[in-house]
Image (cartoon, rainbow, N blue to C red):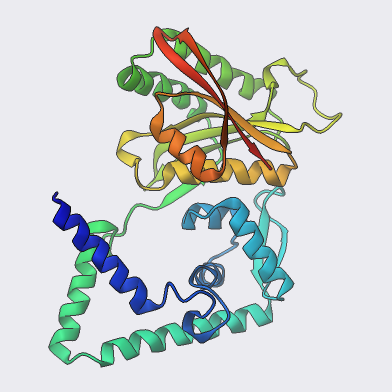
Length: 319
């Protein structure tokens, strides 16, 4: 890969965003909706039993931004929200009659826009263009005949928690030289979750790409290991993100961002006031994900753990 090749890709991106009006804020397809808002309406109108968590993961949207967008839709009479049939803690999103009409209008104008673009070209050039578009999708994402693997976040099933222990131990040993004491720590965290988790306050997600497990994360009450097994009492104020994991072959495909967004969204919906996490400075890729989600580094401290000299970091996200 050369610098010139990178510039060609960036130049094409600038050209195409101008062509489709992606930069024309608030006037996508001559409507009062942005390109992102139009895409969310499209997903709701074409989905089956769509909920906010589905939209966050499928579109890789920040949980706070999506929440504000859905609130605007609700205030504008486009959608209604209610408890999901699959999980009462989730919000099921349904288009109103006005919302359906708006989505249909956007769909019609989108088809007209694409048709106008194609009409400018003679037949042979249209064929060339469509073949090139197919090639781009095939090389970078997928085609209808060979679709890109679908990213799905789900609740853990029997065997998944043991898989989390095994994959954390194996990957951190291979990539960072951690010894068996790290596996022991992960095993304790997972066992505490299995024994003490309360579905109202604690959640684990398993990420699948094309049906294969490629990642996981936990969101739990801070100090869950010290809490009594019985639930109830004063609602907790602090949640903790734990054991974020993305398999090497799935990195760069939005898995980590989807997992972090799911954790942030759950913590907000559950009513926590802040989300915290502890990590080590060597995990630079994870740091980027945390910063994008709005976490702030609050403290650093050198320590010797897992057979390594490390720098521990505390991160915090006010909710």
